[in-house]
Length: 517
Image 1 (cartoon, rainbow, N blue to C red):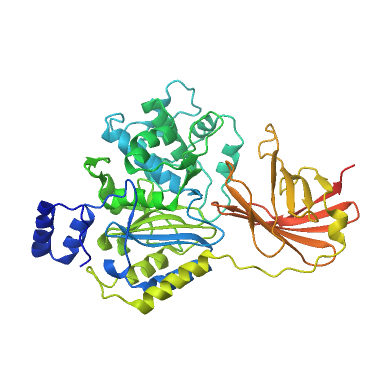
Image 2 (tube, rainbow, N blue to C red):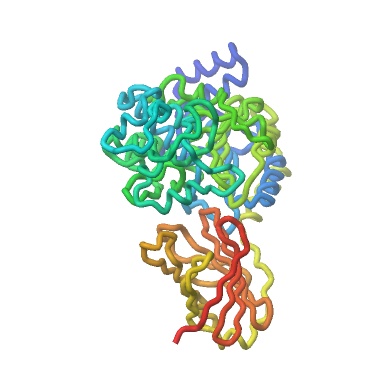
């Protein structure tokens, strides 16, 4: 059994010992963990002190490399046992958690109910938008409740398949009033009849939170969730009306993502306060809404969390494996951030497989050293190969190439390659034609290593480039802390530049530009 921290009082020690006598070591470990609160900072431990195998965790980090993880963090019995970051991502950069934002919005709705602001999860949604004229407000639309939004069973016609193009989200993002767009959608089924993934529904929840509290979901989170948990670093996108985006757009540090998971692991309790209403987490952990995914038939949904009931696991899940995974039977919270999809069941099994005991294991120097070496390895960027610099580099350096509207959204690009500090000047068309273009200036690594630009609202961009031949330059621009990687090839031919890459949907596209005057 690991040493009890000095913060535990003598009377608490007696209660812990009683728990061990009555219920055994599992209850003892959980009773001890309940006195560990990471509000100011997380306590850390070796895996073996918490009954986990360092060698298995080293292998888990290798698995993470195959799934383009940016980070992997594990908490057991209230203490961090693994905290690893894959270069060029680092622990101090907030990471977009994509649709895990939905679970945070659901948590805020639960807090509003606990605080008496939301009278019932069965409250009809249209009641909160009585100041709006809603199209096609038939009996089915009037029957939509907050709980239907929480379970993705609203019946609103919405095209956002989990394995395809999110057409409705794209269309919504082009509107000046997102809430109006969602409310005016026709109905495709009766509320409660079928699961249909819908980021619009969670945006309505964000709007409802604002109606109830008089503040944005982001500000309410700072007051009622992030504040109590000690989360001080966050940013959150807003729609054109100023509402916090309900389906995505929140950025947090991985250690703070783990705090949200720990709140759920501790059944909504934080220090001496109960933040969530009774039954909320029980409904999450016993999710029953069938997600109807043929390739993952065991997945269930509830209160904006995904669940694998057979594995006793539930999670906040964001696009490209932004996960807050809770394994209550093992007293574990796992957090991943990434740039690719990951197999949820496989990941849960690998984490579970690293657990060898409810009490401390003997120290294992060999395994501990292997894990430490693996953490150093993944956190150290390795240079990729670079080609020889052709004479073309000097000819194109500093020239600005301009593009008409294109699928890559590039308006102009200039590469300054012969300067002592190579850099780029990139201008992108806004996705909304009524908005101004965006300009980015940042360094380029020509030695096979990324160079990071200054942090901006959109994240930290890291860029490197190399010559593939005498006229073709390849540039990789990664939004560190997001799941985006732009990999473009630039083929120079006199005053013309042919640009090739993939759009957000992964389709190969191209654009042609010309050097400016």
